[in-house]
Amino acid sequence: MSDSDHPRVLISEEQIRDRIKELARQISLDYADKGELTLVGVLKGAFMFLADLSRELTVPRLIDFIALSSYGRGGAESGAVRLLMDVRESLEGRHVLIVEDIVDTGRTLRYLTGLLEARAPASIRTCALVRKQARQEVEVSIEYLGFDIPDVWVVGYGLDYAEQHRTLPYIGVVEPDGLR
Ligand code: PRP
Image 1 (cartoon, rainbow, N blue to C red):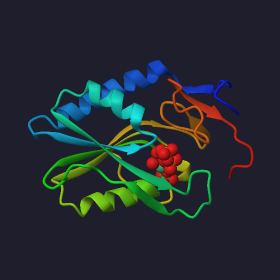
Image 2: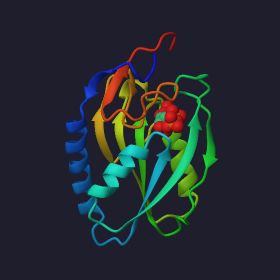
Image 3: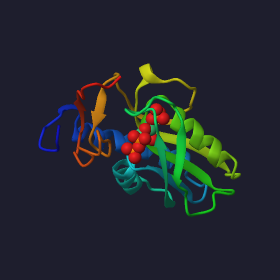
């Protein structure tokens, strides 16, 4: 498989754009008058979603990133999560919105929530573009969710398969051999 293949469309560019507008409207309403919001994008997958979502928000916001590596997505299914790069800004007393591309087992989000809660933010919520409920292993709350999707391997709009397809403008489905 390579970037020259065209994965079949699961969620189109237009559907993504429309849903992001709705999410941004809701988030902007909920955080109006709360001061500056800190958006924490989870690298690498969330870079595109964060870029589009943040431009639709009407509340004051600060952008930060964190990089985590989960071993549950395609690699060894250990479920362990590792911090690769931390946020730059202090989260103390801040309203934090975690921005994730996908919630699969939920382990990354649970780890991240625990990590950030220890820094005494004013609040923490999560906005995820897609969720695979069938794969969820741990309870996590997602206050703003784009789409529930079936248990298929998705790529595009930030999501990869072995680093391929991240820059596709839509979310597509691939069928990698030997997975799961
Ligand atoms: C993906 C995704 C989430 C995580 C979700 O990251 O961006 O952070 O997996 O999986 P979970 O719910 O099972 O924990 P990945 O480890 O693939 O890294 P990447 O974003 O750099 O591709």
